[in-house]
Image (cartoon, rainbow, N blue to C red; front, side, top):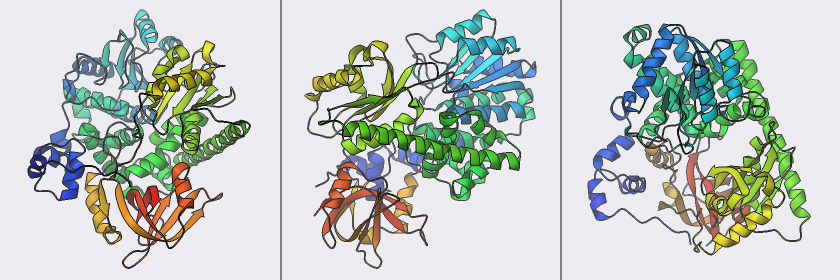
Length: 573
């Protein structure tokens, strides 16, 4: 049987006595320990729960330098990353600098040709073209050589980032990164790159009265559509300030006059007026990311900054087509992996495969599919345009992916991630025996694992079919938006009477189960059902009973938008 979370202790339950049992239990599992914290979590406030950006280390210095550059009409270059954190960050800074009348240009490196981060060659080129100040967004914290080159050329660099640094910080004019600095006293460290950039814009308005006069008080809230998009897409913890930014970001997105956002919603069939974190994570962000994965990130930037209906329509369709191409190429790579695995008589404990023709930007999706299907860690690599060998890791079962990479010694030049996912660059000497090295590392750490699956799902509560209704889901949604460190609640439905088990999709990749309810049947669905879930579904035949575990959600494609179960696991009763 599936395990359940333990309820909050008596002292905490008394502290949260103004809440119902389920809400109190869910909050306790999110680290809430007082009534004040509970109220702040359930009712995040823009005015009360956002911190003064000038509290960040180097922020007053950076804001002053940026304000002076704006007033003096210095040439400012906004250098942002090419993903759905850097692009929205670049967009919001574009809007801010345009509003205050700055002399500026946006620069986004090409993922395949230039690679990640700030390059010395890029700094030199833009400096020759008159750049006097660089502001990085979602990048720069590890680019020590490039920042040093800017200093040699007499060009100041303000770094805004949220990634972890190397052993030392770059010698920039200012380094704003609450997640990286040992001398940081800012109350919240989990902002995404666009969140840090927005804080710099707010601080610049606060520090310079002339600029504040140019911008109506409160106008900066309209930039929260991009902050919310990035905060949700970049999967930073949705707690603290991020919860406020994500909540208000969604509110602004629903009302945003941004033409490109409206057209992006249109091509993805997302209702902008009711946009949710799932719409951002599964529909909008993949298309923004597809711009750099399949072509040029500037297509996404132009979409989100254009004031032309015609251009927005063209670019939104272009990103949608790029996303379809991304899926098709990922499918082709998946088939190639299946072919190579099918030629083996036995699968190793870790799968590691690669091909110089595979785009590294597509391999996370493929690795995730293979790891789910074969229930073991998967490492897939390809070659970037600059000839570096990079790839993605996805783990499944009992193995912590980051620990596995750490145990592999000098196999990787770079790597990072967490238990279930990560990225890496393979050392040249380790490429041809990569799988053997990882299998050896797996054997070295396997004995340290206990019998508990590190990815095991625990249910938050037991429900009966009659409870699964719109009013119940509305109560759960008081904890939204959901994401990292605020996961969607998981529910266990015991002894459900299964009426039917069907497959749907072009190749039957999706699963649907109809369950008897009090008045109308209740549906449970699993998209791209693989691994244990797929095998367990094959064992269940109507009208048998089963235990189901999953999230609750609205079926937005059915009339009346009934509540259904998004299935995570099931077992015969």
